[in-house]
Amino acid sequence: MGDIGLNENISVASREFHIQTSTLVDEGIIRTEVFEKGRLLFVEHSHYERRNSEQDKGPENRLRQVVDQFHQSIIEEIDNLFEISERVFAQETSSAHEKIGQVFLFTHIFDKAEKHFKRVLDLEPNRHSSYVYLGRCYYLQKRYNQALDILSAFTNQHLRYPDAYNLLGLIMLEKRNFRQALHYFKESLKHNPAYIEAYFNLSEAILQRILVLKLEEKQEELKKSTDFLKILLKKIDHYGNVEDRNQSYLINKALGKMDLRKSLALMHKYREQHFIRHIPPEIIGYKFYLRLFFGDEEMNAEVLKGFEEKLSAALQKNPSYPDLWQYLALVHLMQCRHYFLRGLDNFRDATRINPHFDKAAKNLRLVENDGREFLSLIKAII
Image 1 (tube, rainbow, N blue to C red):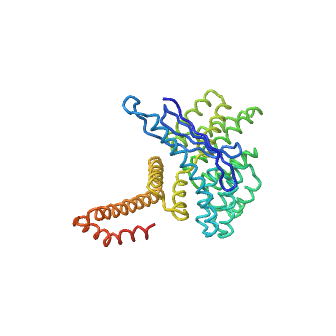
Image 2: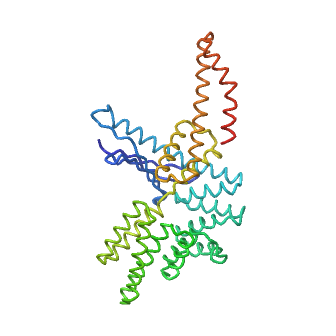
Image 3: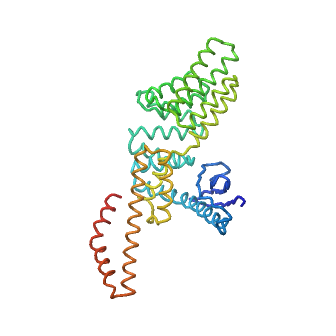
């Protein structure tokens, strides 16, 4: 069975997006890429159940349906996001602005993200997290001076935000101010000694400095920096996950051969894939929250199932995220409500078809009377 692909241009809020969905049959993955004006915004993946083509009649038709459903769900998600953005501006809740700002930020729709973060700071000037998000928004657009301006509060007031100092380090790294980059990455790790991204970024800064020292033939400083880099890679082994440790091993292997440029390329690629292009798991929860409180329609069973699958998959990799468990609980409660109301309709159908069906009539009365408390409880929680 060959790969299946879909391409579609859509217009949302006077903007044009190109949606490209394809399958990787050997890996059992559906991959959707979203572009605007030729620029890749974000990528979504979905795993599907692979079946033996000899045992399952029409596997290609089944896969085409799955691909089309996923493709359409991404289109619907983008459309809903822009509609919800307008409703958030109408209600002016800073927490909602920050959540939808993060969704736009990590899907690389920067102009919308910027508007929401700026509105947060208008409504709540001391909400420091939005300064960091806005700074990241500027950084990803290479607007480094504006990012430094917005993050100046952290350096002036000595606020303890590891993310802010890590971001300042990245900006200095782009400006090739290695000494200042090292300072900020170390400051980030001082406030969070298990901050894996900061360890990788500090390692990259050290490696770039090593390349300069090698050209200048400063052997003593070169040895000190190399030894420090090896210590940092051990820290990654200690605090990181399996992928982090594998990357650390590859970098160490290249260092052992003194292939500094390969080591640097490995670090840079890993940062791009796992920290710059990576969409944090909490973003799935924010999408659900925004759809729940600002969507114009109640989520149907298919949408709820989609959120259940995404949240469950995120929790398999990140079981210590309490917010994700909270959102998944809400999804399950809404599914309970959906099936409860469906059951109520089923009892009504039974009594309509057979008005003398006493058992169904009794169950209908029980559900109508006692079920009100159940529905009220779900409504109060949601």
